[in-house]
Length: 319
Image 1 (cartoon, rainbow, N blue to C red):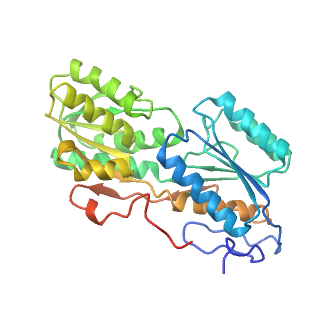
Image 2 (image 1 turned 180 degrees about the vertical axis):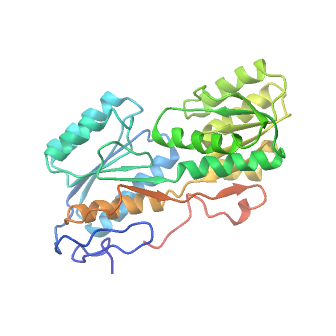
Image 3 (image 1 turned 90 degrees about the vertical axis):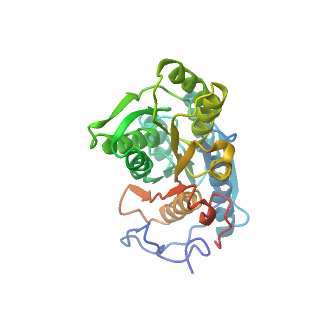
């Protein structure tokens, strides 16, 4: 019996989530939840928001769950949070557009007595932050590059929108490359916009500018695929690509000889992230605070060698 199944329990089990036992047992039923994500055109956000809604409805089938997309417009996200507050939701699940700039909106929610749980990326002032261990993800993806190049070569870090998850992935990658004097980072600051189109656009610039590239690390899978398409378009096959996400698209690419230059992606567990976030939210409305404000979900590396055994985003789970 857990908090998802009944709200009368006093603790949530699980290695990833340790809740304080200081508050007395309560039985407040969740009635309404607001979810704001970057883009519902991103399959990862669709999977996470649908998983969260399913688990909330498991706690209370009558609960109203409102999921909206702010489309990377912070002003739009502020308006969405205002609407959640006006609707009197029990808690907000927030994929923040900016980790610091969103803080006043979170304070406003708190003033109304509404907990805010940031997921996928962290937010200043949130009651809890549930994310992939993005430093780890960047580190293992770039360690693959360093190992394959035997510590020597020309590499590119294809950056992205400056949210906490991207910043952490680049940090992890740089930690690895910094240990190898023979690895030269040709570029690390261009924004691929987190999209296939953005990755393709910045890659076209790299491929025109740099005649010798050995490997490219992209901050997510859409950018990896865009980069591979740019390489195909420009008849470049002298480098390989690693990434972060472990998305269905990258699963397909890792099995496709036509995308052989994509070799690895550090996975995100888009089931565990919303599951833990919902558990935290249900605990908070029952007086239970997480022991730590940051809850990290581990990443693992998916490669052409192990993709056949990979249980990806669309794997079915027993809730």
